[in-house]
Image 1 (cartoon, one colour):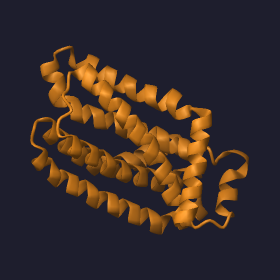
Image 2 (cartoon, helix red, strand yellow):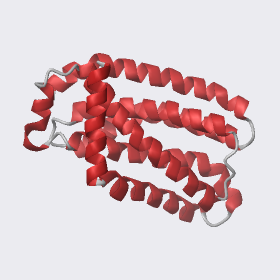
Image 3 (cartoon, one colour):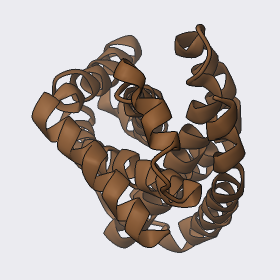
Image 4 (tube, one colour):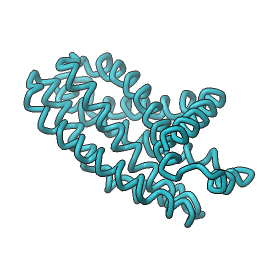
Length: 222
């Protein structure tokens, strides 16, 4: 399973590095979201700073939909999805590999966005350990949910609109927990954010476990 996961993750990441779709589309999209939120709230940094954590994670959540759609779009051409299904790879390994590739892209995005938020919103990134741990746990949860529901939507004609409808409600607890953990850390209370971080870890474990079990049948149905 782990060997297959490594192969799939390497394949997806190599495709993204060569095509630069994530760099040319997902990152600018997230940056525009952050900028538009800032314009909507106005130039007053006393208003922007308290809202920074929520705005950051909303941008990450929306970007994760694009990253997930891209992950399955690369399998849509030339019967590549059927080739993947018939390759003999462990379905759990395929799930873990695709989730790892999406998570890797999101981690890079979050690193860039955190710098943008600090500059645009005048934010001090305090409580670095909680911030980093929150990013890791939340990213695992978002990637696992995205790949699971991406498999459901990938075989349908309306996958572009169906995936956000399936994905966003299930990812809402991750959005809430990550926002609260970041908010506590940024306001100088990293200990209070640890409770929310624990909740994120629980959700990440559940989402990964469900994906490992369900991805095989979902891949066959798609």
